[in-house]
Each structure stands twice: as structure tokens, then as C-alpha cells.
Length: 256
Image (cartoon, rainbow, N blue to C red; front, top):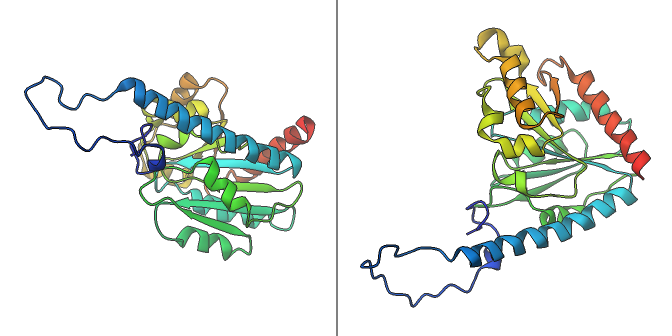
């Protein structure tokens, strides 16, 4: 069990459980955890992850590849957004996708149908991708110089916030069918994100979603977060998203 997020991942870091303990419920805290030990495990996990993230980042810099980590709740429309984005960028620059899901390869198949290379990562009980998983994906994915690698993380607004994958930026995709208070409920994710995409704005006439309140909440937890409103289904607002990608590529070239 991952000590950081409670998922079934990273079990290899914690195999020294004492299975001979007695279940004596006379004492007041029968299963009180060793907080110091849990902290050390968490530090080890994040330290190992950050080591792989640094290697990934070095690879991205050497290839002049813009790596974007797309994070969201399930059903936000990340895959539809990716398919639409690929359709608009295909032929203009090298593109590749790392697709994260707990089970199935359905989303990766949708990406591959566009003609773009995709690598599926199934995390099982794990609730997020980590940098080592991405490193393995890079062994099979071609990274063309000056291109974009999209990393579609597992649908979860908690666990992916704490794991650096070596990406240039996290992009939080929030559907207007969700509550506008999501940035306040999941502040770590929106604090870690460079951009918030408000997706499915074509549905706004049928909803009570308060766009201004949502943006205000996001700015409250991260004053410098960028915001783009779009509909991956209709294409409205997509040009602003592509312009943001191009701006990030320019920053990458300057940094390189």
C-alpha cells in the first residue's frame, strides 16, 4: 500500500511488515502507525521518483520535446481533447502520447487510431503514473526533436499532484459538468498545474456552472495559473490551447 496516497502502488518499498504481532485490543491504539517509519517510506518513494523524473527531464531537454502532464477527474474529456489536439497538430510537429489508466487500453487505441504513437501504461490498483513508468514508455516511443509528448495521467485529482514525471507543465482539465469548487477541494493539484482548461463549455447553457467563481477559486490557490475555456467537441477555444502549447515550446527553446 502506498504510504503517500493509499493506492496499491509502490508496494516494493514496504515489505518488512511484522506478521507476528498480536491483536491485543486492550491498549488504546491497537494499530497506531509508526509515523517516523511512514515518513521515511514516503521520502524514499518521492526521492526515487524524483531521480527518474530528472532523467526524463534530461531526455526531454536533449530532444527539445515539450512534455505535458494532463491531469483531471475521470470523465473530464482528456482523451477527446487529446484526439482533437492531435488532429490539429499532426504533420506540423512530432507527437507522441503516454496513456495512463488502471485497466484497459481503450484510450490508447483511440490515440493510435489518429496515426500517432501511443504507449499504454496500466497501473492496476495504482491511482497515478510515476516517473519510472514514463521512463519505460520512453523506451518504445519515438521522440522527434521539437515535438510534444502528451502524458494522460490516471483520472484522479489527488495522487498525481505529488509526482513529478519530468514534465514541463501539468495541465489540469476540469469539465464544466463538475463542480466549480473543485480547485478549492483539490488545491494541491491546481497549485501544481500551470494551466487549467475548462472543457465542455458548449454545455454551459444547460448547466448552473459558475465560470467566474471557478476561475476565482483556481486563482485563490494558484494566482499565476493560466486559464483556457474550450470545447474539445465543437473546437471552440482550441486555438488558444494550441497557442499556449506553442508558447511553452518557445520557452523550452530559450531554456535549452
